[in-house]
Structures are given as C-alpha cells and as structure tokens.
Length: 337
Image (cartoon, rainbow, N blue to C red; front, side):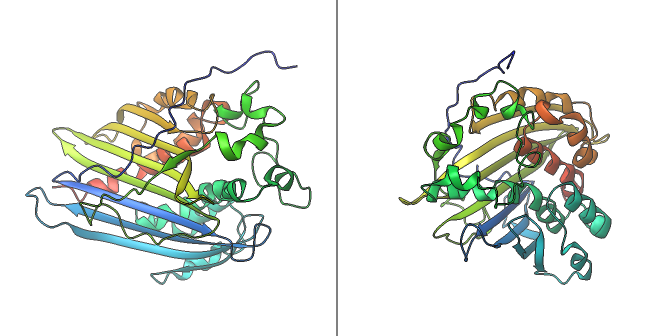
C-alpha cells in the first residue's frame, strides 16, 4: 500500500517558443535527433542527428560556424545500434554497433571516442540513449490501441527497470499519479502541449536546418547559449522532445529551460534555475527544485556527477540529460573572446 504521495505542481504546459535573439559575443550550439519508423512501430527505426556550433561576434557582425556534425543510425526495437554512419569519417564509431542504449552506450562512447568530448558529434552520440528512450512515445499519438500495444509482452520493455517504472525518477516516485492503472490510456491527450517552430523566422542563423517531418516522427532538440560577463560564464539552455500530431502540427511531451552561472576560472557552478515548461505528470516539476543540488560542482564533470547526484527519485531522466550537456561549456567557452 502506498504510504505517501509526491508533491504536485501546476503545469502550464506552454512552450517557450522560438529561440531568443543571439547575443553579441556568444556561442550557440543547436542539436536535433529525428526518429522515424519506415516499417511500423514494431520494427527497427532510423535516427538522423544534426549539430552545429555557431559564434556570434562581439561587434554584431556575421556569425561563423565553428563546427558541425551529424549521423544516421539504425536502431532495433530493443534500442540496439544496428548501423551507424557519421558525416565525418570516424572509424571508431564502428565499435558502437551492437551496443544497447543506456549506461552501456555511454560507457562505450566514452571509451571509443573520449578524445571527442566537448564536440558536437560527441554530444549527439551521447544523447542517443535519452532520445531513443522517449522516441516511441510518438506512437501514443498515432496508435489508437497504444495502451495495449505498450503492454504487449512480445514487445521489448526498454524503459525503466525492464518495464517497471516505480521510483525510476521524480515523476514515477511511489504514490505518483503516473503509476495509476489507466494512466497510459490518458497519455495521448492529456500530457502534451501544442508547440510551434523553434527557429526564429527573423534570423536564419537561429538554428541549424531541420527537415520537415511527416507521419509518426519524433524529435529531440537542444539549444545551448553561452556568453561571458565579467568573471562569469552565463548559460541559457533549452530542451524539447516533440513529435508530429495526426491532425497536423507538433505536440511536445517534455520541455525545459535552464539558466546557469559558472565561475569562468574554476568551472564551478554558482547558480542554477531549471524551468519546467511541458512535462507529462503533476509530480514531474519537483525535479527542477532538486536540480539545485548541482550547485558547487565542477561543470566539466557533469556527465558523471549529474547521474551520481540526482539518481532515481531525486532527478528527472530528461532534465538530467539537459544538465549533463552542460559539461561541454568549458570547451565551448574557449571560443569566447
């Protein structure tokens, strides 16, 4: 019997909208990972990732691209990498074929490509685990019998602990509304929000180019802006998991904004504000409060320390993904004037 109920929060479920104007003297990283299923929900699917680092000069002149990366990946229903091709030849990426998403994939990526930490390619490869975890959510929007399909014992249970979600994160803590028996049946209509484009139509450089999506298709998109003010590196980060809607447009299931202040000399995180904008359950925003536990940690170590500091019900799987991406701030900051 459940003895407690996690704190609930009001959910606005409203997107932050397009990217803010680029600041003079800033670096902007944008990434996207697009998933689609040419052979249906039960078959292997394809992920196409793109990333770009852009520098906006202090004098307000034309921006210039620092680095770009991309890959195409074929993934099994059990979230194993079946094939991988990057846009820049990397022989070592062949070592990742056969690896399953999660802790194994992160360890293998670190082992095979550790010298690429901080680059756009490393970011989108590291993000494969989280993006593939949430990708199949799109079928809850397109499949009328989604609840039955998701419980089908013949389908690989790749979420939680072999399908068991109890205490896997803040949103699924014991007593959460997410664990109610009929909650999956309501997920397709109640736990999402309409969202528009992320790129600013008045600024062709606001995002890298992202293709139109048709049919059941999912996208994980990130933006990371950094700039310098006196002794601080300031961060404005955005994160969204969204997909196509059968009636047109897009719906998002996750969206966060994160603001941070980092001591430029020591790399220590001095302040952090995580804003939950779109989340599926009333208990989910509680993770944003707990994220303050990262203050005082070395930002360059976040890919490891976030998982150590915010495990299980102390964290949100997707907010943790946002925070882990901040580990690249020192590498990007080296390009600031």
